[in-house]
Image (cartoon, rainbow, N blue to C red; front, side, top):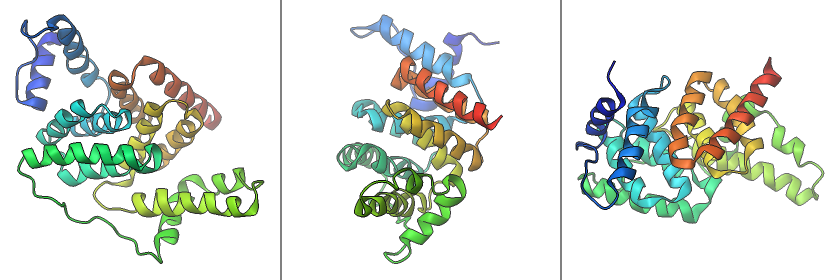
Length: 254
């Protein structure tokens, strides 16, 4: 079996078309630790493809607003076969979770990487809903996976908010984004779990979306592999928090 230095060199070449760090630069020791761990070890755990891993990475970097690294990994995602539309959809769907300003920052960096790669913008539209259908189409995706959980949870709010909050979730989170083509439902839900884990402080939502990701077609191995892969970019404490939420969700299903 190859050792992690050899695996790192192989994976780094596939992703970035270059050799990993040597003794050059100001911090060669740190770069060797980083690259050998991520690309020589973590990238080989679990059943995720390189394309899946890069979409996970792009998602976490967008959530964390680590924009220089995001630009590099948009290029890596293209190198391992992700389409521009898939990358764009992974970033677009961050908006309900991180807000519009941070999503716009990520879109700007993504578009810089696309332009550098010679990709014409704007990309083809992936919207599938109308103003009239966005609620019903969003609900058609939401209800089989999550039921009426949000409406039930906030039923005791003043009537205006008890109505608006679940409706906005359905229309905006599901209608405007989850209905879009370009990424299948299983990948969207897997990336949503990663998004929530990377945010921190969203353990209740991680728990719900772990179960949602399973219902959408992801195995537990895929979910665990995605969270482990995200760890290098979001840190160990957020991995542990997400794992604890996932374990709690699965324990309740036993």
